[in-house]
Length: 158
Image (cartoon, one colour):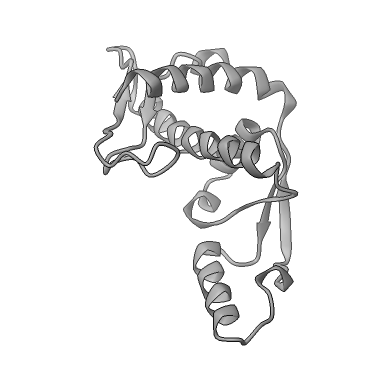
């Protein structure tokens, strides 16, 4: 993975930051772009940037509430096996995939069902896990270094 170590950093705040800083004025984009970088490098940086932002939020939530017992993936990331593997490698935990592609939509429906009294508790809903993506331990140090670069750019880009 050494050839991918020098990719640009992407801060995914094109419309302001939601989490963890909740700063609508924060702007993102690509940082540390060099003439030698290719479109593939920018694409990979965008994928990493989105996941690094999620991982940054995950760490804040895990510190406040304890680590979750399961992390589930849903949405467009499921269209890319490389991106789902990258997620597992960055988070360093297995990623579960259930049989519903749009888990956020399903979650909203389940919350509504609880509010309407159609189910007793949202925690009673257990999605069917259809596969698990395990992290590759050999990628851990690589992504930890890249996450540190991401955080440095994040802190210096207000």
